[in-house]
Length: 454
Ligand code: AMP
Image (cartoon, rainbow, N blue to C red; front, top):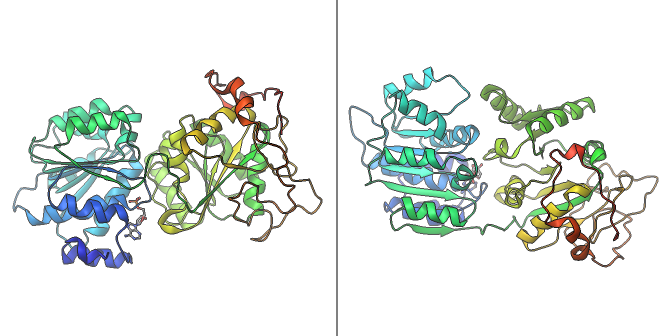
């Protein structure tokens, strides 16, 4: 299928052509015609699938068809969970709408409200907003949502995770019932279904990725390692592979800052991005990272959500996420648009049960490989590669220890011993798997002694 088949206007096709897209992605193929028909839509699609163009293109077309002269009330609203995503959706509106006369604004917190008010006062057709700041505008009566014809809830699952459900209720109550409602979510949980039942009118359903699928072209690998050696191992991996652009996830803002400082001390140009940073600092961090002047971006889950980086080759989980679905989101940051990607997880003994939960969600085991020289005190109670430590252990280029593709039952290290140990994971992981006791911070975790080892 080509874009011309989707029923989009020449203005939009030109803009798409300028982007160099050769064909619509699956979510675009399905969602665009349905939205153009005016249907409500529930779409399950993760970041990286091209979902943004999947709703922005038909939204712009519908707006251009019915454009009114004179006063410009907000006619389309896109709600996003994070400031970054709002900024990125807004960029997409500019990109795809560049040959159209529509006006847009993005309103989100962390920046001054006054310029937003002025922009709203001049009139906008499309408003991209985070719920909190939008409600600030509502309470100051600087925005009027009574003429909204179409609303998009982007990353609705994340909005629910972040506790925006009441805000969403309030916002939707301010719009006419006779509007088109489109919802995008990375997962299709019961909560999302309930939200769809409540707000969508006989929606069409598009599902391009099930909730537990990870991109095929992402190589996933776990390095078991003691907590206190993770930072050292991370520096080594980045240097050894000569990685120039790597996104590293931590669980906490504090952890992100600390790791960024430590990596900087190791000589790696690093910056952190999280909710405590000002919007200006976050935007700068992202653009430095995209430009290549920053090599390592350390991020929390919330901050990383929706980061639009085209060809991110490496993602590292410095700590596993508490919520298994977040693992899928995190590694979805790489391997986008058909590119190959690496997702490496540094996993310490206190996280083994989290890894189990992730593997259960993925319905597969992730390959384990101990990096020579970084053997954990408490070996992982599962199938694992234990390569022998050798003198000349560093490859330094694509053919070295980090160059290969992995993906089999073994690690990616030259000179590996094969996995001679039988998988012992089920019995070993039980003892700590479900009791829910987690150290509050990964740094305080002490590996527990385990009876079964590999
Ligand atoms: P999204 O899932 O909306 O975050 O989009 C992921 C990336 O895919 C963005 O960088 C888009 O610019 C890009 N993209 C969107 N549609 C296409 C397409 N049809 N072909 C190639 N890349 C695309």
